[in-house]
Amino acid sequence: MDSTLPSPVPTHPSGSDKLLAVLCHVSGFLGVALILPLVVYLVTKSDAGYVRANAREALNAHLSLMIYALVCLPFVLIVVGVPMLIALGLASAIFAIIAAIKASEGGTYIYPLCIRFVR
Image (cartoon, rainbow, N blue to C red; front, side, top):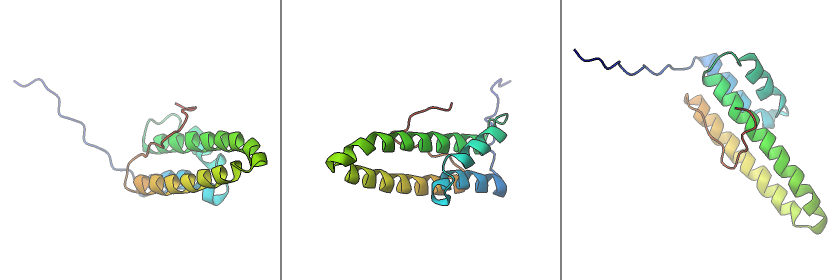
């Protein structure tokens, strides 16, 4: 007899789970960058699933971007900070769109250069 267990069947997230995950990633465009992922993460904290993972990644990304922007602010006085902030904003928009697409496909996007505050 073969004692190996079959590999678990991957679960496919429901439509509402996908919507919550996508909204967490695009919350910066909606004006609730930190609030929405934080609320979704706290509500789904007991779950170890798809929505919680996406909310955690979005929350970490938004917190990291806030810190990066605060670091760039003093450089605005010597004019170098303006292009840095523009590049940061452009990169965050691109990464958020990529993450939303990945979440709509049922996956989780790991943001590059993201500090892991929430685990």
